[in-house]
Length: 197
Length: 371
Image (cartoon, rainbow over all chains, first blue to last red; front, top):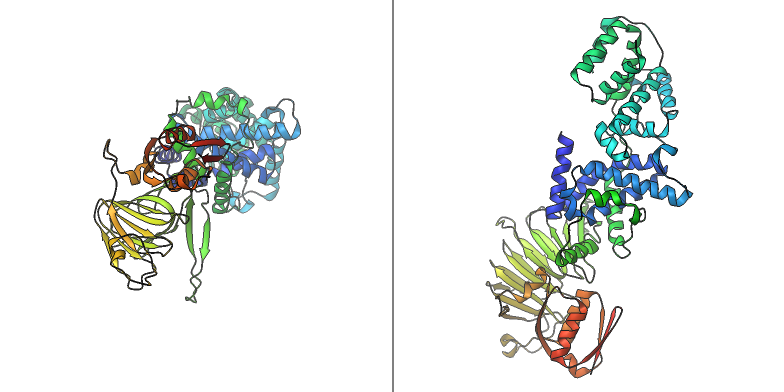
């Protein structure tokens, strides 16, 4: 996979040569995803930005140990999760902090009706359905859809089983699908559209 | 139809986790249940739509981050980190013992790296066209060092309390950097684009070589020590721009204060000669392993070579980020020769005391020295 390959390459350059260019590139590459992930937990753009910054400071601190980290992207998301939960814990005095008990603000970009060839009404329905998903389910949906994570990676980040990820995502997709209208169309047309994409 | 199974298959297909047999199963189900088709298509369209990238200037946020990274080292606690609760990391990145010297560099580089990695814009005055050139500045605090690579591949080791500035693009006929403090350069050879280092007192022009430049504003001299290759030095205050060419193993010493130096040229006598005078000397080799004293700092060794205690004190101040007060005037002029390999302030003072016969007292960041 090109993205993982790129990250692996940057990781080596940072660890071996303290290459600031690689460090900057890694930041650019992963900032959006990490910021989105943190934002969905802390619900503040400013705090999320600081958390991502802390995560990258951490990376710089442990740069000599980076080669020992197998999947740096997963590692970064995991620390982002931990830092974000720490923030919640400290600022809201949450007795127990875990993602499935929290209110998660998912950041899902659905695009415009023109891009999707579906009406604004449909987009709205999908959005509503996402908001009604259980918190953990929303996070899983976000990580898979927005960040293109593999189930195994999501499982590692959230410290749950791959099986749970798989089930939760099926539930999310089902809820979203059921929010959409139910029409009958001809088979061939449907199949073409689905397989073409 | 088993709806759970159906939606599971759809979700697997959307997330790219579906096996070929699961895709086949889904297609079969869709043929049997055409009524599900529209929903699946809509979901698929919504899933595939490219997410909008947030309107966030990542360069700005990265610069902000670098600022935080530098501030972080004066107070090294991550705001959002919970040190006790980070078992995950420890378990993931099984901690290797880090050697002291590595740690020194790590903390040093950390403390300093792009301490100020900021982007300044300057507009050439004479040019009506507002051409902005982004300048990169890397600086180190006292007690820390840094190593950077310039865009042309040239490696620069930056000693404590030093600053180097260069054009971000690093293009043009010359490769130019501004230096205050001390740096060791290993310049990548490019005969078409000479490398020029500007300091307060001198300009050093090279094609490709390695050498050390020491130019602290609070020190008396600016020194250029050549390891190999050749360099050409011009004095900034010299209207004739006479070029001094150094050979490997030579060191050029120029006084910063404009007063004459004790060199032969000076003895020849030029009354009223105000600009700094250069003296050419040999660079100094450590007897034990013939390494070059001028560049030992790169290897994390603190070295003095017959230097007056007041100069030694300046080096110690930078090296350990402390303030050194010498109360005895005679002591200030006492020369010291020593090499310390990554030792603590305590050890350094202890050793100097043995030969210098003085008393010292370390109080936090202040060292007081007297008889």
